[in-house]
Image 1 (cartoon, rainbow, N blue to C red):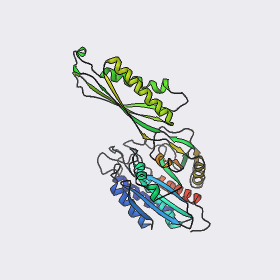
Image 2 (cartoon, one colour):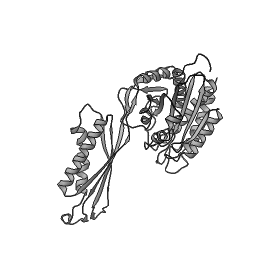
Image 3 (cartoon, helix red, strand yellow):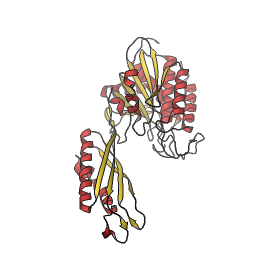
Image 4 (spheres, rainbow, N blue to C red):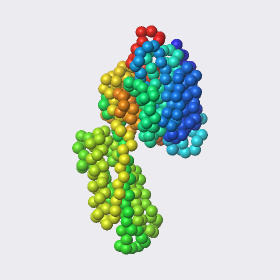
Length: 385
């Protein structure tokens, strides 16, 4: 049997090395090479370059034709680290601010547990996904024939969560994370000298009106029982201190859980932009795209994952409400049923995407054991196949 203390030390070393060498989406060449080499050292069959920089490990035991997938994300963020840790990022402007280094390390740990100890009958696919942060990695792997080349029947994923105690496991059936849509509204007019706004059709005032009026979509146009968010995140112009701009761009994102709500948000956004543009004598162009789909957990597999997590967790809980953050894992769930869940990263940890965030190494063994437990529960074996 695998020595869990030694595995914890090994995963910590992996995690800190990955943290020191973060790579942005579709640039995870060093990370992918490390993952592939480590899996091969466990005797696991490896395919590289899936969806660009993705890696798929395949481990078979026994005679069952059933297969399940476990997924980890590998990419980092364009954030400058401020942790002061000895293993802090050595790449200026890039850091693992969401814990994907930890996710990768704990899935490698699960792979070692399962390769050394067995205890299941069937096939496990270890999916190491690129480019989760901007919602393209899962699609890239699927478009590269993931399901045809490495078929599986169901999929599971874990994400660390600051604020949850170490050893805590949490998930929910149905919607657990939202869709994300992004928008860019460009207002074009006629700028000029700041002293004579009457000579042009400047765009700052309509842009500011647009920022305010967009807030009425959720407050006044949607059913109050629906969960939705519309956030303006940037207002950019081509003006200077003494010149009125002729062009302004209002950018942001929207979160929702149902396609009908997403469609209504877009419809209202276009209506508001048209009305403001007409009222101010300018033109408005709306670009609205859908980047992430909602993460929807299969009810029966949620029960299975909670049952598997119970014996290896300090606490297991049903999450009361879904989150309005988004997750690329959802793309896999459009092809097969699955469950996505959270494990605690500590109650005092800075939030995700914060310059001071760091994955808590004490959570590694918890995540690895949950991954291994769900495999053994879903691919039961009467002996060490």
